[in-house]
Length: 95
Image 1 (tube, one colour):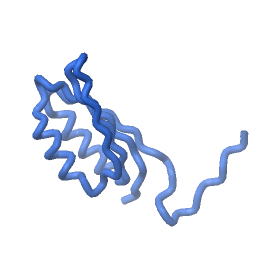
Image 2 (cartoon, one colour; image 1 turned 60 degrees about the vertical axis):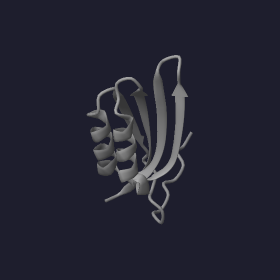
Image 3 (tube, helix red, strand yellow; image 1 turned 45 degrees about the horizontal axis):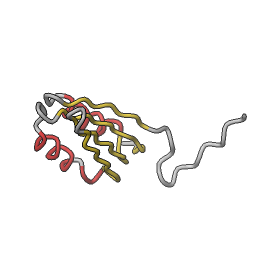
Image 4 (spheres, one colour; image 1 turned 90 degrees about the horizontal axis):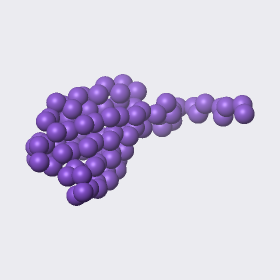
């Protein structure tokens, strides 16, 4: 499985979402999360979580799929096209 860098953005509605369920899922994928930033936004009643992951597209899809099934949770991901460690780097684009 090819690993890629990615970003996962999660918006959690505090009054609806099972916060413990979100944290349990993030713990299950903890070895693949290399950074986590959380921001409570009281004026909107949400928590915003941004993850930086180093994993396969399939594992990212598994995480986002499970999170997206939770009530009050919205999630999106973006995966890089960069080479894995040790792979040759692509030449820079001609500008």
